[in-house]
Amino acid sequence: MNVTLPRIAITMGDPAGVGPELCLKLIEVSLVRDCCVPIIFGDVSVLSAVADRLSLSLPEIVNSVSSILAIDEPTIVDFELIKNVTPGVVNECTGRASYAYIEAGMTAALRNDVAALVTGPIHKEAFSLAGVFYPGHTEMLADKTGADRFCMMLTSKEITCSLVTAHVGLNEVAPLLSTQRILDAIELSNDAMRQIRGHDVRLTVCGLNPHAGECGLLGEHEEEQLIMPAIETARRKGISVSDPLSPDTAFLPSIRADTDCYICMYHDQGLIPLKALAFDTAVNVTLGLPIIRTSVDHGTALDIAWQGKAFVMSFVKAVQLATQLVQAGQ
Image: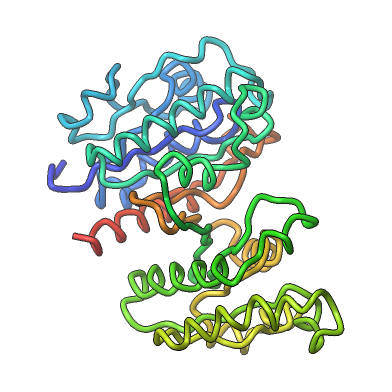
């Protein structure tokens, strides 16, 4: 393999989910092997059991993260954290292990031992059982890397959405919104999409309330008092961005055709249309981090864990995008 290819840390995700299967399938994809050196952060005991069950091959194995700089072929870094795991059943051990893989991959990326971090799916209940109280990768990585501002973006050929708020209950969304937080999402998304597209882009902003507040009749004037000031500031900085649109019509085909990225006020506002249009191919990107991090856009799929049914294309797209962002930053 060409040693000039970037090394990419790929975390296995929760051992009881589809992550182990996806990792093994991923490294067999020529598109992946041609663009990077994939390094799986996980447990050989789990990967070996999955490989035996599904007739998949295991790559080279090392036992220390310190060996990364010598790696120029697809490799597993064995953490030796999991002895026994039941597919489809998460517990404290699987949560602790998946957290350890992410933390090690993040540290390797911060040290420039790897060029980017691509994460497999985790299970939030397993995290909680292990005493890890982050609601997801995004919040964990932002906290651990000291990011001043960040947001979650899901991107695909069909549609891209950035989230002003992410893993919170609906009753928490409005109190968390601020003009600065909305502006951060607009600016981070504009920068990222220009890097991905290679040209100036147009952003479409969704209102928080039905009918974008109906001129203040619905909601608490969030569109006028919070969202519009962020838009006006962004425009003064040269960003092409729409007024707040009614969320029930913002994703019509005619508007999607003129939109590079949607700015959505909360999780499901963006992820419902995105997953309806691009569930198998969308990629999660955390914007604002000092490292490049992408991920699959789906969960652990416990109901099909270790059964050979998991579709690997979202993982492939995540690796390809991470590599593209690495190259764009060189």
